[in-house]
Length: 135
Image (cartoon, rainbow, N blue to C red):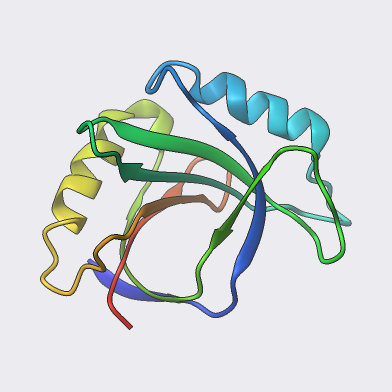
C-alpha cells in the first residue's frame, strides 16, 4: 500500500449501477459511447463506491469531464487529497483481486469517515484502487 494524492478535484459524469456488481461493464460502455477517449483528448475513467445505510454497496461508473463540459448524466466530484492505494495489474484476469485489495485498504487507521473508494482505470489492463484518508 502506498499513499497517493489526487492534486485537484475531478469532476465526473457518472452512472449509478443499481444492480451491482452486475451492470458495471454496461455502465462503462455507455459512458465511453457518450464520452470517448481519444489520443488528442484522453479521458480518465473511474469507479466510485461507498457503503449505504442498508449495508449494500453503492457503485458509480464515472468519466472525467473536461473543464467547461456539461453532462445530462449524474455528476460526482472525486475529492482532492490523500488516499491509500494499491494497483491491481491485469485486473480482467482476476476481477476478485479488486475486492480483496479494497478489503485491505479500508482497514487503514487514518481512513476518512464517511469516505469512499475509487478505482482509477489508468490503462486498459491496470487499475489503481484507492480509499480516502483524513487530510
